[in-house]
Length: 284
Length: 284
Image (cartoon, rainbow over all chains, first blue to last red; front, side, top):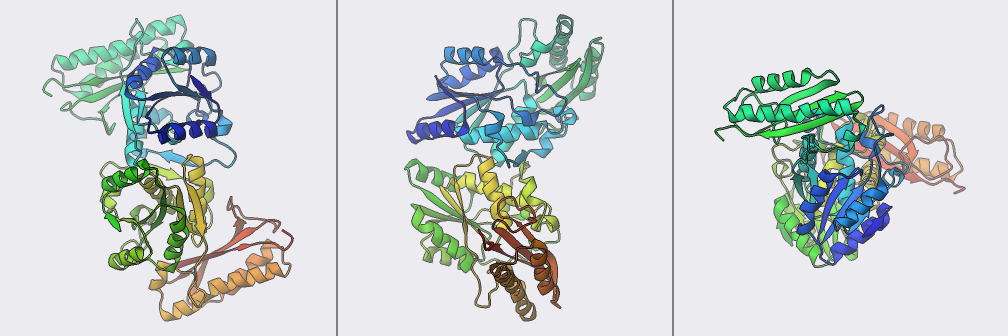
């Protein structure tokens, strides 16, 4: 497994690979890899000649006061996991090499980033879109895989790739859950045991909504109210949002005539957890 | 010479060309081609296997009230000029194919676009950067050539290409002038004979500044004041700006210790003309 620490040597290598007509699959991460990340790598592995993983805690997608400084890191563990999975190259750039002096370009995907996480993190998705575009340009993969847990991020990247005529297939990987149902996230490491116990309620609320839809519930207002009621009873958690949105446009839906995404975010102290579920109406 | 009217067929062709290991040179234009455009094509021609020209009057770089609807067009004449110059392919997309329903991504280069033309055209350079990124992604040239007449545009595109890790060399071509010294521009077609006579003053004011610098003038305030004085005497023209800026950062300079760009913009009725000159101080 090769390791690249600077954009110039990394892009020189990907250029060589592509020059030989070989394909690259790409999984961008912020490191502290868990089964969720590994599942994305397993998805990409059989589809390409070379599997590339980036590990970069991108400062521009954190707002002041967010958890940039304490974001968990484990480079040695991450490299071991990548090697065990058959990753061909890991790219670990520094912030200084990605954003050298004079850097200023920003990519925004405005309509998709006004609600859900965009409401409480208004600059987050500009940071995400910009760094992912840079990483895609350095890597030039044929396929890039992102987790559906960060559903809005996936939608933003899909939209950006289409809008900017990128030659990459953007694939969303299924949410991977812990045994207790909590969606895997590097940020789960922040939770106290008590918060962790209550955090199970996110997945439970989504499962309840799924069951309600399966039983014939078609009213978005009722689905949101039931989910909100389930989550607002938590003594240690504060609901950030419960929204039911169109799977592509992320616009709030006013009827359940097509599959829609129920997305939730809850704060446990300084830790904000998100989860979501695609709800497919009975008749569809 | 091949002609492509939609992004999909054009990018399929450029992908084929690149797959054969052949290089592409790219000159993006808004059509109504004049000697300025042709000089850019001549610059690129010997450097690449395939020379590609795009002709696209990009609506997103025009603000409401600007000249989008009356921007001059001459597709047949443009195609004849391209063919005569040995252009291999012309790309003439429609606005609908470049910005289909749901399109929303925007690229901004904020620090370079606050002054000069950015002041009176605050949304212009986001439109330019975004469409140029799309065109570069569809074309994937090894070299792309832009005129130095639109100096701020060239600086924005250079910066964007560097910031977003694009694999393209951005080349600036020299300003080409009419016999009377006016910088070639498709918008010169808007001028009445009387406006046209006064428009010669832009180039004259720059030449005077150049002579002053050659004679030892090093004070930016004096250079700007003299240029402003020359231009403000016009009965048919209204000065939009006179600025002396760093050639890379476009920040106003407070001393002439390094080459700097003197840039001017003057409105003649509804027609806004721009011109600029690189001023190289005596001692450098």
